[in-house]
Every structure is written in C-alpha cells, then in structure tokens.
Length: 433
Image (cartoon, rainbow, N blue to C red; front, side):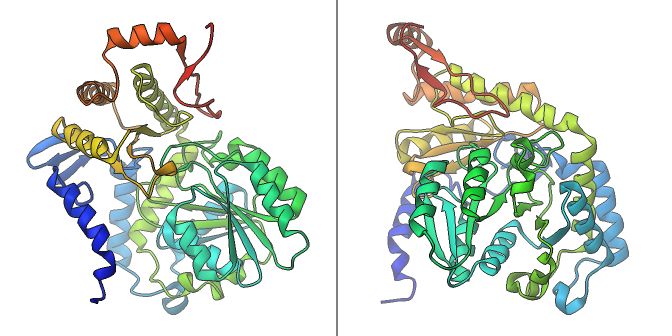
C-alpha cells in the first residue's frame, strides 16, 4: 500500500466534485481590486466569502504604515522571537493589544491557528482536562491533541451539558480548561458566554474564548463576545487572529494571569516559528486603532449583515440562528450545494462552499461573510442571485406558492437580532400568529 492510498476515498470525492463544475477549493483570482470585488477570468465578481469584516485590507493608512515598515525593517525577521530577538514593533503591538483588552499581558503569534495550537498545547497537558464545544474550530482540536490533555466534547452551546461533564469528573486530579468561540465560523452563532462563565466559576475551571470571528464585530468597543456578554473578568485567555477584522495575518493571546509571560519560554509553537514581518505588525497596529477609533465600521457591518440575513430569511432560506457577519444557507444535499455554488460564481458572486464532515450536523452550507465594505447594491445583487438560483434549484418556493404555504402553516419571520441570540431557524412556525 502506497503512503497516500489512505486518502483514496477523499480523492475520489474531490475528483467527482470537480467534474460537476469549478474546483471550489482552488479558485484563483486574477486580481483582488477592493475588499468587496475581485477579477476572475477577466470578469469582476463580488467577494462575499473573505472574512474581511471591516474591509481594512485596502485601508490607506494600514498600507502606508506597512510600506514604511518594510522599507525600514526589510521583508522579514528570518527567525523566531527567541532566536532573533524581538523587534520593537512586536513589543509595541503586544502592549497595545493588552491595553485594548484591559489585560496585563499579550503574546503575538505568526497565525491565528498557531495561537490556538500554542496556547492549548502548552497550558493543558497530561493529567489535565480540556472541555471543548463540539463545533470548535480545527485549530482548537489540533491544539488539544498536541498537548496530551484529556479532551471532552460537550454539546454545542449547551452549558447544562458542560456542567454535567464537569460534575462527572468530580475530584479527579488535574486542571480543567473550558474552550468556546465568540462567533462560530460555520453558522455565525455565538456561545452562551454568560452561562458558560457561571459554570466555569462553579467548578473552578479556567476559560479560553477564541474571538477570531468576533474581534472588531461584537462588543461596545469591538473586543468581541467577551465584552458584549460582560464577562471579561471571568475569562482567563482570549485568543484571536489578525486575518479577519484586522485584514492581515497573525494571531494573539491576551491574559490577566500574573505568570502568563512564562509561556514565551515553554510554548513550542511560539518559540520555534519565525515571527511576523514588521510590515504586517505595522498594518495590524493601525487596524487595531481603527477598531477602537471607528465604531462606524461595526455599525456599517451590522447593517449589511441584517440586510443579507433578513433578505434571505424572507425568501424562505434556512439560515443560522442569529444575525452575524457569517450568513450561511443550509442546503438539502452536497450535490445541491455544489450546483448552487457554481451557479453563484457564474452570476458573479463568490462565497464559501462548506461540505460535511466539516459542518455542524453534517449539513452542506453556502457560507457568506459580510463586510463593512459592501455597498447596498452589492448586497442586493447577491440577494437577487441567491433567490433566483434557489428557486431554480427548488431550494425555496416561488413567491405565490410560499405565500400559500405560509398562510396555511401560520409562518412568520423570526426576530434574530444583532447582539442577541436568535430563537431557532430564520423561519419559525407559530400557531395562530
């Protein structure tokens, strides 16, 4: 047996998917023109799947600061912080991150994936237990595996199940670390963080919140779900990324634990990975300032997300449980999802195709990530394309038929809101309403 033969089932499925249209995992743009537009095979398309939540990838000040930094410090550091020393701008960004979160300490990593890998594999080892939400990101799963701690999954967004699993551990030795996310990347739902924090306090556990998709999105000052839920004092570690709202690449962890800085000499993914180039640090520093100083970016993002979510929900699409920048359509089969994705690209709309087993409940998804940079016209163009294709594929009914069905079933639109959990799917059956 050849070393790669074990991947033959995946290769066969991948090949079959490509025969039905384009390769959704190898789209190569001719040019990215703005945060919301690109050129693909000579044609302009709307970008609706880039996680560029605040649209800062083309921000003039971020670009200027990056250009100045590359001229002053060169194109890279060619080594880790441990080997080649910390540049002044690395330390400055860490101070600013700590101040932004009101925390004592911060560590900057070279990717968001590496931040989870490093922190989880270091702070919890053999004899400890990590309790993770079942819908956690791959970087969380991989960080848990690397460290050797026992890993227990609890049901997605279920504090009661978390409580039961902690109770079963009883007085067994070792530390307990709970891991949840601010916004979950597939459906855009949020952790019930107030309840999770209460369970954490009751059992004397530690709590890590991955704010990768919620930094710059949630909270009065953009610090994420931890701020929105008012539980900053209950969270021991906040992990995040620079590759979404901050428009660059990299990751971080902030904490108020007094001995946090010892991680710099015990965290192997931090110690043995080349540090970020000064140009990236400079653009991220400026982007972080924009998060603090420009709340209108979050307001525009919220309006755009509501526009897309409510428009799709009104047409009968089955969506995630709350409005967030991640707006995902649940589809009945992978075949329909692949056909839908190809038709959208033909219509000039690029978004993400998410297929089982990498999705909650193994449901195929078309995943949009809305940006503050999107115009109303772009959101409306995407809506028009989605509705037309959805009807042609039988995913949603034509207006006349839907109206009859809704009247017969007593269906109304659910009021999922920005900043509050939704109540079930986007379309909810209500008797007698």
